[in-house]
Amino acid sequence: MPEVPPVPLSQLTTLRTGGVPARMIETSSSDELVAALRDVWADGDRWLVLGGGSNLFAGDDEFDGTVIRVRSTGIEELPGSRPDTVRLRVQAGHDWDALVAETVARGYAGIEAMSGIPGTVGAAPVQNVGAYGQEIVQTLVEVELIDESTGDVSTVPASDLGLGFRTSVLKHHYGSVPDRPAVILSVTLELERVGAAERPLAGEQLRSALGLGPDEAVSLRWIRDHVLATRARKGMVLDDEDPDTWSAGSFFQNAIVSEAFARTLPDECPRWPMSPVLDPIRVIPLAAFDGVLPPPPVERREVKVSAAWLIEHAGLSRGFRLPGSRAGLSTKHTLALTNRGEASAAEIAQLARFVQQRVHAEFGLLLQPEPVLVDVEL
Ligand SMILES: Cc1cc2nc3c(=O)[nH]c(=O)nc-3n(C[C@H](O)[C@H](O)[C@H](O)COP(=O)(O)OP(=O)(O)OC[C@H]3O[C@@H](n4cnc5c(N)ncnc54)[C@H](O)[C@@H]3O)c2cc1C
Image 1 (cartoon, rainbow, N blue to C red):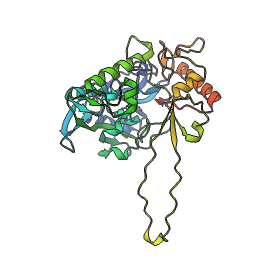
Image 2 (cartoon, rainbow, N blue to C red):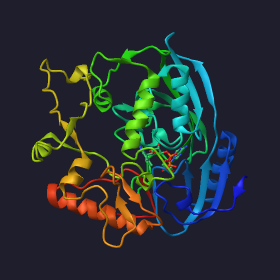
Image 3 (cartoon, rainbow, N blue to C red):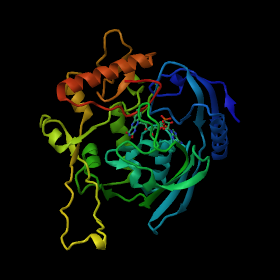
Image 4 (cartoon, rainbow, N blue to C red):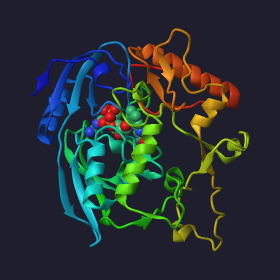
């Protein structure tokens, strides 16, 4: 097994925190990853798979288990389900943005708005990555994964992954265990063949982020270039020279609240309706049908509200730092908690709790962290 000398997680995570793990394994193919996992699981060790470390907030103490790095790469092109589509099966360790760049170069549409998101392809379904209204759930067909409970490799359709707003059954939530302890080996996406053609953009969120009208037509290349530039202005593209990007991206999720609660927030707070959960087919067993249709279930409407706005309006501006702390809000975006250089996980956690308390005191709402927390509590 390709065991390597362990290095601190602070060197492998974009938030730059985390102690040295007891053991570290680097896998460069799917077969190596499967072998390593089966071995670690047989030992009953604690384990953590690590992609690009861009959605992890790791504690300062030693991780008393095995960290398995996923470095398998490769894109395989397969026929799509229709003549105008194509499928790509991509290895879990492949760099996500390199994949997006490749799809744009080949003229395949579907993930171009997610240009510049750091990390690996295998981690993308874990929190159903998304940006500007595009999410991987829209193009994900299936994943190949290995389950810890059986050690078996299987192909699982996207519909079985519980993909929701920045979550899935594979995501650990703050000290809990995931619903399905499993590791993704490869990901299959279905994309549309559009070539270099210029087309109007379908999504309102993307159009407004890029300043486009409903009829303005642009190419995939144009979208990628402009998304990258827009993200860079907000410190959302990794840059070794820019501490505003030494983060886990958005540290807090936009809050999902009931429509009734959203009405208690100031009108200026940006909000977006969540799509209703559609359940159009209702089956009434013939024996139970008395000729009268039961009333439809009451729909609980939910609204997504801007966490960045809540933070700013709780009195915390860009660049905010607690006295003496090496952690701070990004100077470009209040939603990113950043490491201004050598900050410990304890300092980042202290800032995160402070933000949560201020927002809670002001608006009665507890912001939830987006990254996966490993040996650290808020
Ligand atoms: C500057 C910046 C901007 C960002 N912008 C966005 C954004 O716009 N949208 C967005 O959604 N996210 C964003 N993120 C968060 C992050 O980039 C994504 O969540 C990304 O998919 C994480 O990939 P990773 O390989 O770095 O995962 P890691 O951080 O290595 O791991 C994250 C979690 O996934 C698990 N995991 C990793 N690989 C696998 C695998 N193969 N199988 C099963 N579990 C696995 C890990 O154990 C861990 O629990 C941003 C982060 C940064 C730093």
